Image (cartoon, rainbow, N blue to C red; front, side):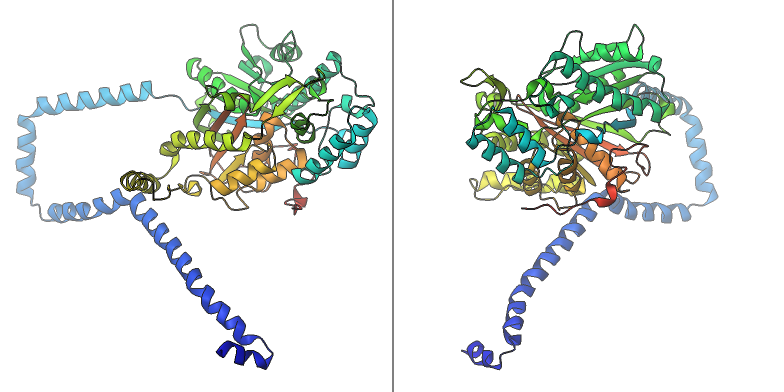
Length: 511
């Protein structure tokens, strides 16, 4: 009644005040909760120091009260136990020596590069739809479906398709596919070698990953031939492992560097579109046409201690999760033929649910390695309470923002980024690199996480000690994570893919 009477003044001021009084307590409660959690995190993280401080004070007081006679008696006592002291010292030195000798050598990321296609390969939405219409392979329903996917995909007007796809009809041949692979891989490698001044003969390990194009000789052999790499190089070619294969390739290179001393490893990640375009009308197989674009990356890793000073990052952890034993997960991204015999990659409607479950398994392994002890205690306590009260308590979602400053989420599509932003409770700035990479370059498969890292560098956000979490999903179904720590304030490398456009980003995306 009071509110109704006051509304006759016509200024609406009382109504605004009433709404504020309702919102203010909730706001204050959320702010207080935030500061309580930050205080808890600080106390737990510095618990050892807080406990040792009183002990240090007590020792200081005792030392200040010690007289010269006490010190003389202590020295006499040590002289009578000289053998024990020498023995303990020898054991301590031996133990430290064994620890240093058996500790895994650090793996450094010296630099990386991403391929930037020429401007004439850009494919705005209008050109994409025009070419799809002119091919004559798609019916009206399929064309409209592709149009809707492109409108909602998060892709911009400056993504790229290979030369073969700009022809009408497209030039689908082995020669055209080889040409695409060479342009991408050699383009990225030329920049990498130029920026690092590393000679091709110094490369001891080469790992190449590309899922859908595996010619003979292999892609790794093409690189060996082009750059005349040495005859005893350990080269590997990974195929059919999906968009998360870039992390797998890094993991393989890491294992090789742990075995072979004083060498470099190069990891090349790409995907090939030319021979893998779908020309049918099955909706689940049309989505990759709309999302995948040309791209590739080359990464230089080193186990040489002298490279630490010039390297950008140190590899901290690699965690791989594979759910291929589950039939639904195995088939959720599946290359097959449709009813007309046309080959494509089919995406299941259950893809996002399976990705969520795989991510949960992955972070369950990763969490104890990276999360501060304060978050691990909260997670464990919540888990115990949930068991005791028969699942009535909501599971605690660890705050990964306390473990990482930057996130590189595979730019597989807008839904993937949205889902991880929600589930990991990230802010828009944490997923900015992923969204902008998807907008500028599209889904470049396993190399997308490197375009994202290049974006963070181009924005000048990477500071010494910052931690980066690269998360990638792939067929199988897999979720793989790589964690890097910045060794210095990282500046973008020369000829960064964002060099000519970083000032335009971030852009506002339509809903």
